[in-house]
Image 1: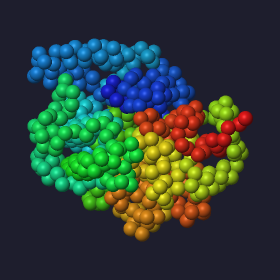
Image 2: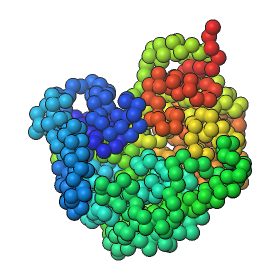
Image 3: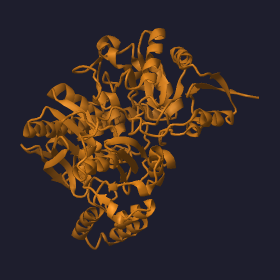
Length: 595
């Protein structure tokens, strides 16, 4: 029995396929279209999932869409009517866009695309999709399930009880009270794009002092049952406002940070293009915005902890599952693990992309009564490529093939030599990852020891802001030597998917300078020998050369682009960046040209 889950229409369109309760494939449309956060119809992602299973659309038993679009449209109309006629043009634009994108007839569009009867297409409430993506993929037989995001149909958060194959909603929060939109409003205020720049706010927060935390927290009323309300005076969550915040927020915190404004806390990090007479002002403003970011992050963590603690108390469970875009806040996830003693599972694609998998999982259990799905142990659910396809791409590149062999151990030893000696490599192996994190399949890898390596990767390879941190990938059995985290490094933790931040042990902070953030923390990734044997072997090879089973791991992409997916994507990024080598399926390519 096959169930296809699909999400599209807002951001991060995706498709996921379940066969008899097993996740066969899952991928975002952006990996195919190369349009970051692609919201369009995921035709390519759907085709990949079907191809991975070796089936046609007509063989699908059910197709599950991740939300109820007409309920969502009701909410948009309802909000627009309150401000009519000033919202008339906005409402006309929404109707035109929804017609163009097929949002008014999701069932029909999917049925026609797949060649199936509309009766085989079902819709799922947005937060039920999120909840199912977390609980049914978790290792827990029962758990409290918390979903937090911007907004689905009307809901912005939900607490559910997961038991066996059942999922029961217990409480919810509706718009305009939204923690996700609160964070997004400040993301926009700090000069970053909404639904993409939230990671940048987390990175900037480490450089600041949360001096406005209490002031922001006072905007929330935290209710005993885990719900909350949010004072709306500073925010404009209902369209057609151009910005998600009001002039009152600007009056409270000063003018917004212009997109792309320089960020530096001293001369050592000052962009060279900033004139000398403007540098003091750049430092002053950078400190101001870093303090705001730190305050927003600290406030958000407190609200998340409130919801999670209440959910655990209400359900009587010590196991908690998280999904929704807010669940990607790895700083908050680390605090949950350290301060509550709860067992935590976070869906690796916690945002709207993960809703595709959640919709399929929901109907496998709730509609079809299928047996409980096996825990999701890997995010390697995307495309893989044959050696022939790789070789064809490399042969046409014009670069020198430095290593080409069939012995995996020899290849890994050669890669480890390069990293140990200070080279930065593009690493391409196996199936692409599911979710926003590169976890050792489509990664950029480097030696984690030197702070200069962090600057180099940021400035000439990734071309991104200097305040953004890099993650360490570490052999799971050795992780406790270098990082402080509660409990044992057993499979299924948020750290397996790079979704929790913890402190670097004091004696290792200077020795792991490239992956230690300004506040002494790291968003670590645990690599298990039985989960990703090839990547784990590479870490062991690096350990043999450096004394550290740790590597700097960041996503294989240029700033503003999706993570690479194909060998051709990898070659393009290799060509345009300052990468030294491309290590791809037992091949090593250098920047030397073949004449």
